[in-house]
Image (cartoon, helix red, strand yellow):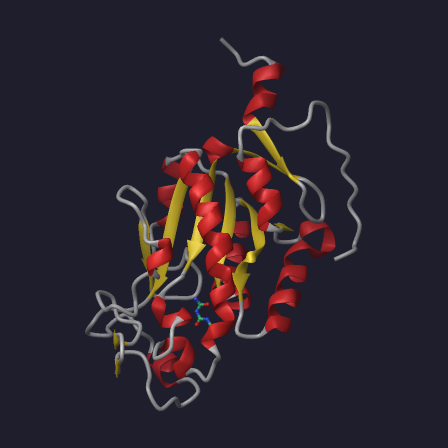
Amino acid sequence: MDPTPETSRAAQRAVDAQPYPFRFDRDATALVIIDMQRDFLLPGGFGESLGNDVSLLQRVVGPVRALLGAARAAGMTIVHTREGHRPDLADCPPSKRARGNPATTIGDHGPNGRILIRGELGHDIVDELAPLPGEPILDKPGKGAFYATDLEPMLRHRGITHLLVTGVTTEVCVHTTVREANDRGFECLVVEDACGSYFPEFHEVALRMIRAQGGIFGWTAPSGAVLAALGDRPAPAGPLSVTTTNEV
Ligand code: TIU
């Protein structure tokens, strides 16, 4: 039997987002957690080797953890990504190792093992956000999660059309992934406080770039608004008022 308008509406959620409400169906939406790895969040890893203060990313863990709990409770698709390379570095562009001429670089030994190398402690996801069995972990060699990975078929096979994007860093791997997803037709909401950067000003501007021009790459919203929409609360009946402005 075809779903009635009432059941269709019950499946739909709406997040109070910018630049206008983000409507989604939990069954067609994935929570994507980008690169919440020790190598970016803890001392001695890739992030610090690039000269960054990694403590700035710690504030992201709590909001991502809350979203992860809500997505698990809702039975949603959850994808964890990790940036990194093969132990033999065959998939690492020499330019990426050399960039910035750091004292230690990808493949070198650090306190959490070889930097940004698959299988090493530093490459893995922080304890607070450890994936559960059945949650896909996507290893990616680049900044974007679609480049040289099987993310796109993984999402299409599950009927996923909408992404809730979180993780680090906002202007690098989150942004690259959202741009790639946007060109593939996925609707992306970037969760503002569940993303972070070593540069707070880049974080803010990166979010504005997502939602500018009527949502040129997608939507943004705070985690509280997303959590409210993820629960067992249907979207309000009737059309949401949609006002598209260039306010960012
Ligand atoms: N350096 C930086 O801001 N980010 C990265 O190198 N990778 C990710 O963003 N994951």
